[in-house]
Amino acid sequence: MSTGHWGVAGAVALLLTASSAAAGHVNVIRVAGTINPASSSYIQKSIERSEADGAAALLLELDTPGGLVSSTKDIIQAILNADVAVVVYVSPQGAWAGSAGTFITISGHVAAMAPGTSIGAAHPVGVGTPGGGGEREKEGAGQDVAAEKAENLLVAFIESIATERERNVEWAAKAVRESVAITADEALKLNVIDLVAQNRGELMTAIDGRTVKVAGVQQALAVRDAELRIVEMSMIERFLHVLASPDVAVLLLMAGLLGLYLEFSNPGLILPGVAGAACLILGLIALQILPFSWLGLILFMAGIGLLIAELFVGAYGVLFALGIGCMLVGGVMIFDVPEVSGIAVSFWSVLVPAVTGVALFGALVVFGLGRTMGRPQTAGTAELVGLVGRTEEPLTPEGRVFVRGEYWSARADEPVSAGDRIEVVAVEGMRLRVRKASERA
Image 1 (cartoon, rainbow, N blue to C red):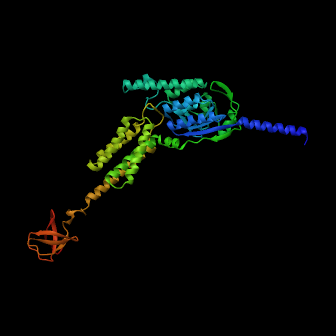
Image 2 (image 1 turned 30 degrees about the vertical axis):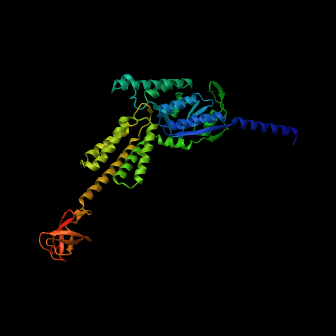
Image 3 (image 1 turned 45 degrees about the vertical axis):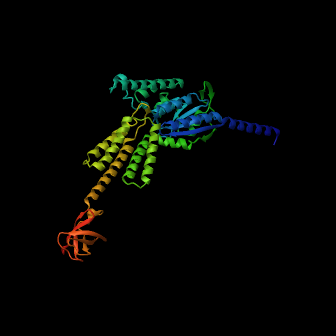
């Protein structure tokens, strides 16, 4: 090979090496579920890691119905102040960036969505119905002021984010005030997002070379041939992320109380008591992560208490029906607070089946108790009445008899000879009252 050929080959090799080095890598994280302290910590640590290891960008794949306002605020602060470009990608198809997810998507240096996804409905839960403070029905002046303040703060917050990222400020405000939601294609037309991409590969190709402002400095993304490195949640973050779900919290509380009830009603079983205590502790931890309404929690607990009371009082189903109603209403209200955005207990898929299960359990217990009370007594001295035995010595009028494998002192109203068959008619302390048994007995 000639020297010229070697020179060309060397130049090509240098170009390939330079291109590979320039491509670097892109860290990829995925958040599916509610936005809570665990997912917030995961995103913030991933941003710090991407800054430290020189990643070309951080790709955040998002699918969320909403979450805590405080956690959302922490995430957005981390994204806006990041020294690495954060690409927020709502995926896969069918995913949504609801409520808190709308804020996070708009805050990304690049905002993208997969076909068939949606974004919006960012009105906070517990603040009231859309349409402005003057048009809402007000339950109380204090509550209305707090609701209006929360709504106005969130509107100002999302407007500032949209302004910083040069996205549709007017639509962003409507997403909070009027809870509007749109598809990926509509979001692209309205300048809510930057592009629609089918998958990661298409997304990386589309944004390669795009100029974004990172930490106040314009820089071009070089991600076309970048290595995609998956950054997983830590075990603790994964555990807390699962725990910080309203559905999980309610189920844990119900399981905990039922376990303790079984243990108290059947002392010595141990397993139901231990499992119930563990579930109750985990449920209380979940309530420490998720802001909750005391009124909703009290109603929910009162409902379970009424179900248990029905088992002991026997109120012909009145307490049972009230308990079911309190559990359903309390379960709906328990996370109905302004600090939570877009998340609540799933009524039909979680709350109703869980309450139905508890109701069936209570009905089975009541049915079992009813059958037990209807049976003749099979233990204790009272069950001796009606049994037939024999005399061990003459009863004149007292003596010893043999009944149910035991020797008893007995008394008869009329003399009975030794060896005769006798029937127990009453138990008087430690002595039996008997009579001569009939042939039929």
